[in-house]
Amino acid sequence: MKYLKTWCLVVLIGASSCGAKHEIITDSGKKYEVKGNTFYHQGKEVTDKISAEEKDHIVTKLNKKLETEAEVASQQRALKEARSRAEKVQKEARKAEKQAKALDKKLKAEAKARKNYIKAKNNLDTAQKKYNRLRKKGDLSPNEEAKWTKRLNKLSNQMKKADKALNKL
Image (tube, rainbow, N blue to C red):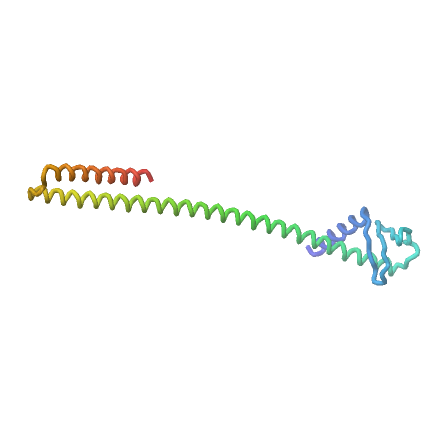
């Protein structure tokens, strides 16, 4: 496996160096252009004029440069993929947050409707008991009887509205 990776890297470097023109600056400060197996200095071919040792040094520097460029490109692709995954996660988190808010809003509405229903029912029951008690005692005049009937109808309507709101949710 290790040899396979090395071999692929060598083929990649060789293939890219054959078709492309690369600039290399040596340790002595000379600037060479390498195209395939041909070396140029200041626009003139110097392949035959430089030593084999210097050619090896230039090729080694070129290979290191190409390896570095390949590694940087690989890291950039990995970074782009990581960014993409992070954006997807953020998008899903926002979606989940919206769903949670909607659910919370619905639960609050249900709790409020239930509370309103209980309150309306208690008010109606209390008023009904008081009305029945006063009626049994005979303390109600015809005007008060009309007021109590009107009040009980109003409370009954409130309870019906609260019941509808509760059943609607």
